[in-house]
Image (cartoon, rainbow, N blue to C red):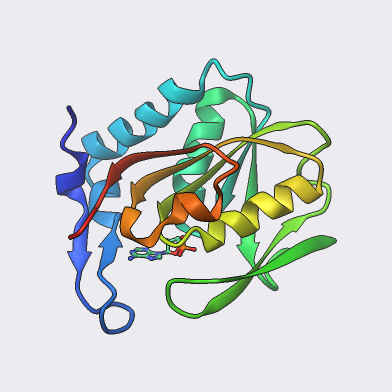
Length: 174
Ligand code: AMP
């Protein structure tokens, strides 16, 4: 059993009151833990015939890009609105705090491509649901959604119940 969970820093009342922010930067800045987390994802997906990794802005870029590199497949960013320069499609969604809109380049995923969607954390599932909707609008198949951290109390799996979810660790009732 790995001790990656102990590398997550929990910040009470950030960015607003009553939210405990699960800070993955402490895991990332520890070389052994960063490599371990990346290897766990790579070992899970290396034989799944994946065509693309889609990473969610911004912490999903870090792990998604490493995973894509290790699998020798393309990496696609899902970005917050207004950042992508070419033709995009977009999706609005609600966050644990506030609301947002994400975009993907309209040529970034091809029909029937097998995709893993990566983010640092799943809370309500709203963000990843929007990313899935973007991939599927382009004709891609979401094989699984992968996270470092899951907050099961917020029922993210329910928000994307037709898709498989994998998380390296979870914080339940904490
Ligand atoms: P959600 O859409 O509710 O599943 O929220 C997931 C997104 O918001 C991810 O991109 C996370 O980085 C961020 N997020 C939401 N809640 C937290 C939290 N408690 N700690 C750290 N990041 C969070």
